[in-house]
Image: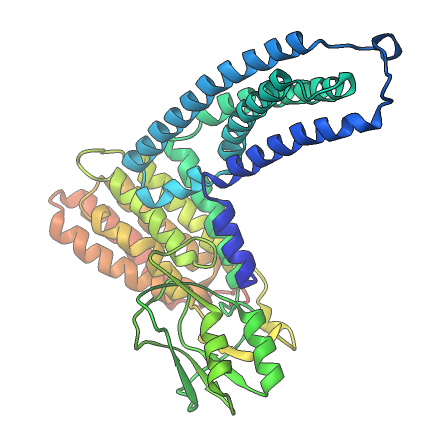
Length: 432
C-alpha cells in the first residue's frame, strides 16, 4: 500500500471528513442551481415548463427539511456516541475506530448534516431573490434528490444502530480488518519484499521519533533503491515500538543525506498501532475482547469461545494460502525484510487469552486447546511446534490455578493429544 494512500485512508476515516465533504457538495449544488438558470431563456414563462414551483412553496419545503434535519443530525450523533461508548465498555476501546470510521455511519450522518446545510443556503438564496424561475426549478429537483437521500439514510441508520455495540458485530469487523492486514502481509510474511537475514553493514537510518511503526512503503523504497543502486534492509515491522535511536533500516550502497531522509519518510510512525498493515494488532485487540469477556465483571465465556474460533479461522486461512516466495521474482527485490513468522502470529493471538483462560470455565479452556490442535493439524509445519509449546505453558497455568482434578485430567488429555500429534509425522496440508 502506498504511503500517501495509507495516510489518505486514515484521514478519510475521520468522523468529520464525510460530513464536511457533503456540506461542500450541498453548497456547490445550490450555487450551480443559481448559475444554471442562465441555461433557460430570459423570457421563460411558467406555462412553458411542466412543473412550476413558487419561491414561497420551495421555501416552506426547505424549511421543513432544515428544521427536521438539525434535530435528526443531533440525535444521530448523540446515539452514535452512546453506542461507541457501549462498544468500548463491552468489547475493547481499540476497536472503536472500526465503528466510528465505518462508512455506513459516517455517510448517514453526513447526509443529515449536508441536507441541513443545503436547506439553509437554499432558504437564504430564495429570501434574497437571486433565483429566477429556471433556478427555482433546478433547486426543486435538487431538493427532491436530497429528500430521497435522507429517506435512504434514515433506513440505513436504523440498520446501523441495530448492530453497532454488539460484541458479535465488533468481532466481525475486527476479523475483516485483521484478514485484510494478513493479505497485505502475504503468506511468506514479507509484504512483497525479499527475505533478509543477518546483520548487514551500511548506512543506518534511525527512527527519529518515539511511537509505533504504523506502515512502511515498500514500493517507494524500491524506487529509491533502483534509482540509486541500493539494497535497503528493513529492520522493523509494522507494530514495533521505536524511539529516536532505533534503527529502522540499513542501506547498503552509496547514499547521501537526502536519500536517507527520503527513506526515513517512507516509514510512518504514530502514537498508536493501526489495523491496516499490522495483523498482530488485530489479533491483540481480538484477544482483549476475549479477556474482557472472561473478567469477573462481565463473565461471558461464550464470547471468549467465539473469539478463539475467529482467531483459529484467521490463522488457518492464512496458513493455507500459497506462499508468495514460490514466485521467481518478488515485487520488491531490493528491499530485504525479516519475515513475520507464523509462530509470532500464533503467540499474539492465543497467549494473552491463555492468561485469563487458565482460571476460566472448562469449556473456554478446551476451546483454547481445540484451536491450537486445529492449527497444528491444518498446518503442522507452520504451527505444530509453537502450538505444543503454548499448550504446555497453558496447562502449567491451568494446573496451578485449577482445583477440580477431573477437569484438569480432561485438559491434560487434550494437551497430550496435541503434543503427540506434533511428534508423529503428518502429511503437510500447507506450503508453509
